[in-house]
Amino acid sequence: MIRSILFVCLGNICRSPLVEAVARKRFAEAELDIDVASCGTGGWHVGAGADSRMCKAAFASGYELDAHRARQLHATDFERYDLLLAMDLDNLREINRVAHSLPGERAALFLEWAGIASPREFPDPYYGEQAGFTQSVALAEQGVTGLIERLRAG
Image (cartoon, rainbow, N blue to C red; front, side, top):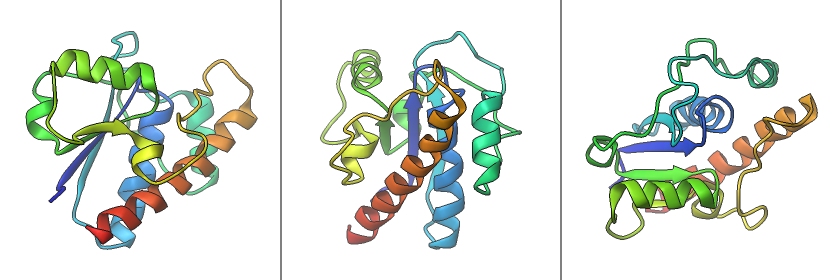
């Protein structure tokens, strides 16, 4: 049974904090008692807030990222979280490298695990325009909807 999920991206300022916020809100609405958090595989932004462009896109859709503070993946995360969902293949490889190995499907691609066929990887909007951040919100919502369906199915 999954009781906790960690969403993982590169810097923990765009994708993973967004998905964490969407999951937190949607899980509460669905009455799923699952602890969620996010982190990055890189340490460049540790302690920083979410990217202002992502905050703006998230807020426009009803999600709050103001309290978020970036943190880096840590060895204790493999003990604390039942499932680690990476935003892309590079971060999935880094999770597996840090963990050395995780049993079963404890680490997977977020969209793939949620049953989203395309895109397989969650695009990083960081170097793009505001529209990419808005598209990220829609993709996060779609992914979390699929995640809820899979979790309810057991």
